[in-house]
Length: 264
Image (cartoon, rainbow, N blue to C red):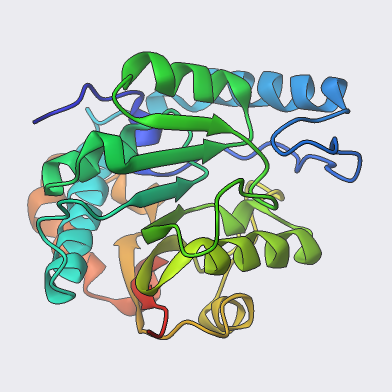
């Protein structure tokens, strides 16, 4: 079963980051915010950034396509190694699900749409996800307060989310919620940048040491992946040959990827 994809930026799993939201005044109810003006500002910032950067992340660029293909191969390998494919009845949540495309790909790995859940801070992205993937459950919520019982999910997906959270306390709150809703024996599928962005001050690297701080109760190895996107996009017709050669050099890999497990 295949579900309809969304934007190229979502397909690449490389989310655009506006200034971080001030969530100190969030409402008492989970997923609702008193600071409507700030929420609106975030939405406008995302729309403006997407309009400017859409062509940059187009899958018509062979480098972008190679980034996506490589990441999906590694995800499949990690899940196969864990003995989790096909996903079957395993319950999966993506924190920061955006427009839903990445989560929908779990169907191609044997996941059942009714067992997939997405959570995102921005209401317009949640609306798009609900429209494009009505078979999947999406929530507009702050990931500091996930409205699910303890040990609800077999797999949590966190792709380029923590690099967008510059406030350490908020990042720890989100990490604690992820660990809480993860079942014993379950896993966190991680993908995020290990280098600071030279062009975007709202992106902060998340090195291995920081991942361990965020998730002290999880174990597993993180490997480097993804040729530096600005370089990958410039390879042109040489991409099929040049991408794997350059990506074999660890300093040129921009992201960390891995499956971190919660003890039984």
